Amino acid sequence: MQDKPQTLARRAPFVAIMVIAVLGLVFLRDRLGFDALADHHETLLAYRDANMALTMLLFMTAYVAIVAFSLPGATVATLTGGFLFGLFPGALINAAAATMGAILIFSAARSGFGAQLAARIDTGEGAVRRLKRGIDDNQWSVLFLMRLVPAVPFFVANVVPAFLNVPLYRFVITTALGILPGALVYTSIGAGLGDVLARGERPDLGVLFEPHILWPLIGLIALATLPIALKLMGREARA
Image 1 (spheres, rainbow, N blue to C red):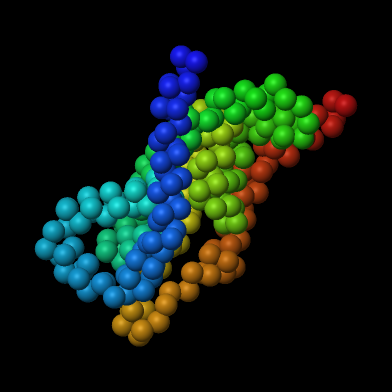
Image 2: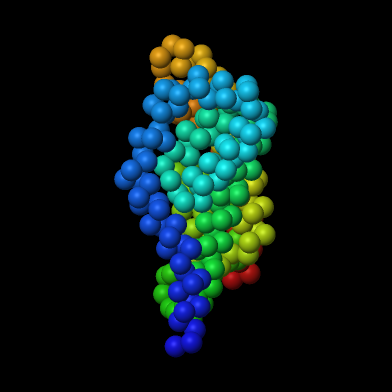
């Protein structure tokens, strides 16, 4: 019974994040959407021109909060980073803020549930245990794949490694490097957002799936998958 208060204290940050995420989804979806950026883009530019350093600090703080609390608007935040700061340093600012936010939610989930859940899976039986062992044997590749494959939601890529008790340093490295391709693409879209807004249009976020972007991304995914394939081939050869 003495451990129960400590357990509750460890889980409280992640539970609080989930509560805020739900509230954000209900109340902030419109406020953090593209229409809000379109309505206030001139004000943002004027404030940036008058307070560049403070704008960077406030933007990064807001972006970290959006990611850490899984609030809606992460994509719009990335576009805003490009819009305000250009491709460079916008891409670096976006990637750094996203990484910091990811670290916060990962740490909260890992501290509250990760070690205990991973231990239960390891002592259990069945497909879930085999899946975890497969991931543990290929953690670097799996973590990179979770970042590189566009179909994997950012929240999932932040929380699942925590529940599998992935070491923090692996999570940080794979997150910081794995999100760079997507950050570069969407920041570049944001950097050209001024012309899009002037025409009263919306940016084409499907550019990630155009051949000149998609094929290099597929190449990175294949590179991340290669160690897993080599291990499987080695096991089959020894069998």
